[in-house]
Amino acid sequence: MIKEIKAQDLNTEKFITKKVNEIRAAVGSGMAINALSGGVDSSVVTMLGHRALGNRLRTVFIQNGLMREGEPKRVTELFRKLGVNVEIIDAHREFLEALKGISDPEQKREAITQTFYKKVFGRIVLESDAKCLLQGTILTDVDETVAGIKRQHNVFAQLGIDPMKAFGYHIIEPLIQLRKDGVRIAGKELGLPEEVFNRIPFPGPALAARIIGEVTEEKLDMVRKATEIVEKLLADSGAFQYMAILHDDRVTGMRGGKRDFGHQIEVRCWDSLDAREAKPTRLSFEVLEELAASILDEVEGVVSVTYNIATKPPSTIEAV
Ligand code: XMP
Image (cartoon, rainbow, N blue to C red; front, side):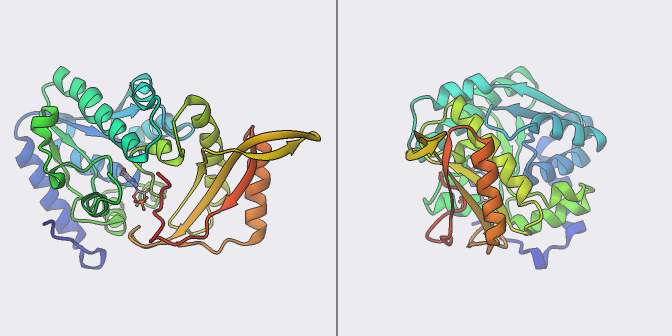
């Protein structure tokens, strides 16, 4: 049972000192690897890990082909300014290959988990002297996985999986007692810029969690473009998280006076404190119209744009 530290009870300085010491003790005199995705959780772990280990921590960004537009460059440049060198490892072919032909949500998540932890990290760890991987699992990831709602990509011990046996390395999870609000406080204290510690959450399975049905390069291009539009137009919404989802089924539309059997994009925008429960943000109709016009204009093949008005539960934040 993991003991939760609520954001309001977090003694940030004490927490950071404790985690830095725990990381040092777990890694010993060796090396560790750190998987940075650019999201809030992995960014905070990166800063903690560097404070604890300095040059003995190798930080890698896996280009899995499922990331948002411009993400690898944005993340590496930002961390370079913070004094952290980030290595980009291109593994996008492996991920797309693993996802080929799979449309079931949990199977998609499992394919990403295996490719990430077994294939890609298995190889990186084998090639290096590291025996530990640092990652940003938080309590919400664990809760939903253990409850069987959604297999979050980064949860193992709580499912009875020993990463050492399954993948050949230990996993260190310094943020596992926190939820998103607590992680943001720690990130601020560790010197991350506000654009990072207050960034909207983004899931480990990345845009694959935003495509209903099989993931293909063509669908990734569409959802990536729609995501860029939604993130730009809702940046000032004050919402907890917002996203574009590409549906699997098509609907009849018309373009240039001709029938166009096209794609559907669903926009979701959530108000939430820590992702456990969420409500749709009451966006103005003007904003919704602007979203629809931009998506219909800029994402080729889309003829329908909808706004999700369900709550979590029974919905979940991501569609997959
Ligand atoms: P759901 O969709 O379960 O999401 O309501 C709750 C929060 O978790 C994020 N999410 C993930 N984060 N790995 C992650 O690190 C995952 O596999 C994953 N799935 C969902 C989601 O974006 C939301 O903030």
